[in-house]
Length: 531
Image (cartoon, rainbow, N blue to C red):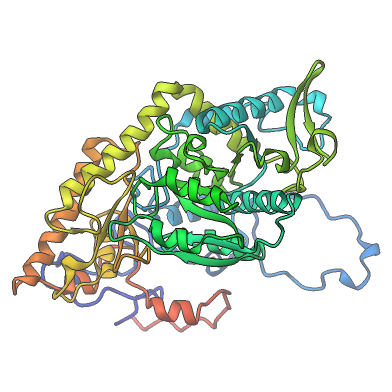
């Protein structure tokens, strides 16, 4: 492979069927049309510039020998240079505003702009956690209303708003379970059961809490094996952690029996609520026997995924666990709303608190705006559309790709295995890389681990049939190209070398994982070739 004038690798030899113009007439700059080739910000070599004027720093005599004696090595850019740099970088990324984002188990859906507008209102966006509570009554009231609807939608009597993400919510739920067992003289329970298809955070969180994790087997149709569960339950088990709908995209049809067996053994039922958007407005987890469940607000009620930084993973709790909920709590007094901050009085059994303050206000506002704009009937339609879209994907692709669990409908996501790729030389990874050339982000690959070569597709409820058809057309075309290879023709290089049309070629992912370059180091400039 040769290098162009700016030190970027040029394209490899054109494979059969590729756009020959990309190879016969490679660009001399690394840019491709309007897609600019952009260097690292450290390589832009503008150390003496800044886009803002800063006042002179005051004397720092009290810092002693900690005063900086040399430049710190940060690049300097003018305002237009900074804007262009980040715009060019953004053009190298896929985005939900560009096309469908089919990552399974992630619910990468459209975030209504109304939510963003509400989150930026004065009184929400500019408040400080140390303000007197009398000056933020509207914000605390919104937290109270959000808590009310989370409890109503789940059929649970209590909710902790402060956890900042799904895994943080899992920690909250397990700490409440541990506190409840200790209060009941059952502190010897040190085992948590989790299905083989569980999200990785489930066993990780349980281990973080000091529990021993034991796997529950899975049936051939992708559900919890009740017989195996019953054998492993006992007076040493503190809780089970089951995702429902589960990570295979299936509803646990025996969930009520799972709860009964768990409670009969004196354990608690923790439900991973990552996939609540598939049942919201139709099923209340509390009615199924769930004791604790975190809710990813970004997945069910729409906030930027992961909160765009700060996230939110409220946890609803059953009556048995409610007394142990962490502070703060919102309570309504005759003089207004108040946050109960200390583990005393009505919160005397609280296990503590999850974070320094009260949660993420912007996430609360976005989720509450989503609830109000949809209403009860709209939230029910969220679940119905999420399930409909996933089943449409499964039905449209099921004749060319191999569904992992072909019998019966799926829930919010369609799961395929790699059986249909056998004998072609094409792997799940190759197929995913080829999707990039067609303008789509790959689906979740190789997860859940219980399915070989898994391809997990979650279209979400916000995609139209037109966009789903566009996505399906692309995947059917690629699957058809795989079928030609299996029949003795076709072009395997289309897949093995993909992506060809992305800003950069395929990485050596093994080397990237084992020998990552995590820090930029300046190198001497290479002399320009003679003209």
